[in-house]
Image (cartoon, rainbow, N blue to C red; front, side):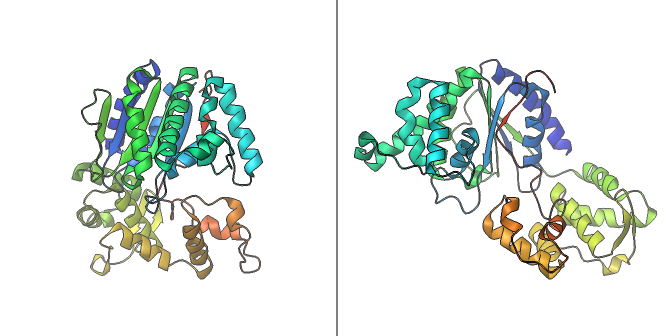
Length: 358
């Protein structure tokens, strides 16, 4: 949290520059659990974004083989396409919004329609070979975003770049080259192993998020646990085991509460079992796996089904699942909601932020 606050202040300054026509790339970089998503969340809540169009998506671990997967989600938000829209409705949405923005973009229409799985009958598009279609698709997306940024400042958010596909990477590389004169802020985050070629750009800023130092980790634990004297030996043990990773710290506390090691309420816990019997899982995955194992059978089944569907599960997908009588599926889902098993603090949508009221 402390690193996020410092980084957020830098992000606010860069956002103001981007809004003035000097586009920026801001990257939150760090290992899993250090607060990269929280940083983007705080940036997108800034009052500096009033009057901006916010478009966002995220990559997923299984998406590297699917071209433009994060971009498709972003475009669906931009064109206000929902899953139940058929091909005719998608065509109407894309055509109407594109031509309203700028009729000069009409040649880009076939590429965008094809990307959004709308049948394209344009003879010229049909005659293109795969490399030509790839180039036209990249140009169409780039020109659409840059043209929109001329109408209103545009904030693009893309999470977890370490999982993006090669086509999305090519689009980002091309878009970054056009940023210096655009009213566009590109907010991204990724883990340290991800590589790109933007580091030498004067308009690229890396915000490094590291695990908490011992003093800050101790402060976080005091906020979570409280100041009961029985907690004194627990705090250094948790800091050492989690190595200051904020998410790992919070999940470890949740585990200790669920297993009865801690009793009380947030900020007012006490140690209810001898420290010698305490077992803290060695990794974040081990913590989450142990917590899932402790779920009742119905909640565990629901969580497994949701994991198959994806990282975002619309209500219509889980409500039809058969559950025990008098135990609605929504009640079971409530058990699996934050802070239980949703590790991301936000689920971005396409948002046109108001220009007058905060």
